[in-house]
Image (cartoon, rainbow, N blue to C red; front, side, top):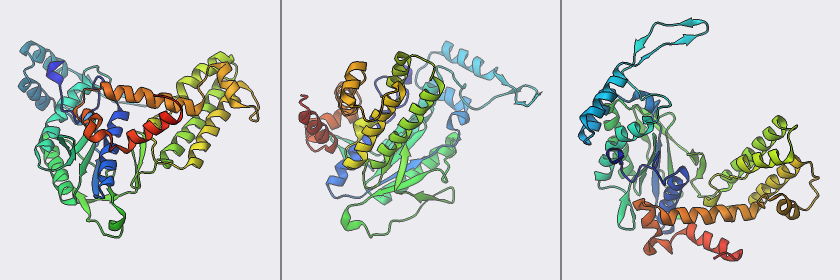
Length: 366
């Protein structure tokens, strides 16, 4: 395990890390600079089939430089050099051929190998004198496996970060797709009419967007969470109706178990800070109506007694519980960036923590 340690910027496939924590750090950095009336430029880079383009020889060289014992390397080399594949198309199967690129699909070690393969890019980016101040640290990128977001308080800095990624991609056969990548600007009000420069990669323009789905969470350039709440509402309807359609013959206990597992998760709800009350109320109504629909209760029935009797969390209480658990995960985290945010210097400036405190105090928690 010590041979697979990667930079703190990498949140993918690491114990105690998750997508929600990666999104949290990104939103904290943006909110911090927004509170200082500073423009922020970020770029979401899409690596085309990154796991399938890992060069075996370069991967083993990186593992050797990390001090992986020779006998383990020889096993891995033999394992990868002697793998063959077939292509199946209809009833036809091709002859076997050797594979020289890509980590094994579904392999236990594959995500860790990819993290090692991409880790030098993280080190190179960290060595650049570009980034956002976060406590005692400077952060200019975040990774979740092959999902990479570049962060800079200046457009010139973002140009340099993109150029470094292109350079690394040429050296290590990582192809970034500019058509699926995106740039987003977070500008204070007095800069709203200022025209921002165009960014290119591989002689293609990278599109500028006002919202982007990053790790399943919709991020908007005005930092509103309304679109992400609407995304969760649509997902709630889709999953609830799927349970109702596929398991209509099952008992209520089975339906409630499925409802808790698929509808009561509310992905990234702990990160909803800036939203309109109308949009949030629509989510509450969708959640409670879907519960009533599954158990065959009329919509006009009061929701709280139903939730109490069936031991299903009431939606506002569910979000508070998710927030409380997430706060505990952050305080226990060993990630240097999360620690920096939870440090007293940043703690009281954090818009997210301020919202959490008001939410918990208003409901008599803490």
